[in-house]
Length: 183
Image (tube, rainbow, N blue to C red; front, side, top):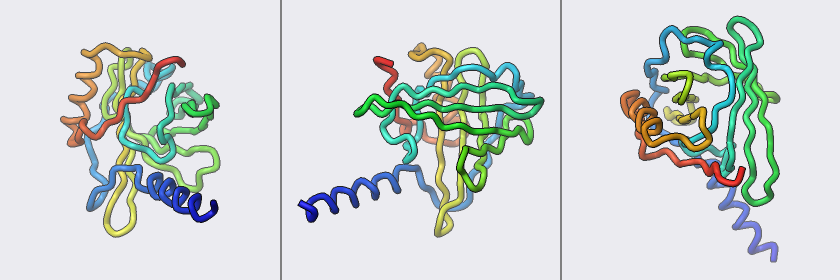
């Protein structure tokens, strides 16, 4: 029994470790939302699609709620539902605006903050968010999210968001759509 379980656990952990988009070289520096309005960005967004993420795995009903803490700081709560157990988990962060749509984000329990860049938002229907972190061997890991104000966005909203992903130099075909059903 143990001989069967260990390889399964190893494969699961290997899958989680490789559940990001890795590329050679340094993190890209795409253009971000200029004249970013932090107040207009506040509120609830639903995750429409994302680059694969070890943290999120195959979570469903993912949403993020932003509230403004101060002039350049927002409080962020990401809620994810495990589709197997139905249990939800919250991930709490503080994001500090460093310029326009660029933030540093620090999740509770995290040692070093990450970048959190809003590539574009129209504030009322969608946002495209980017994070990148250097990895070993002159590589980096990239995450892209399409966030929408509607749990099930219109096709037009999705097309606009995917156009932002593409025009920012990223591959929209690598996005996986998040299950927002039966939330």
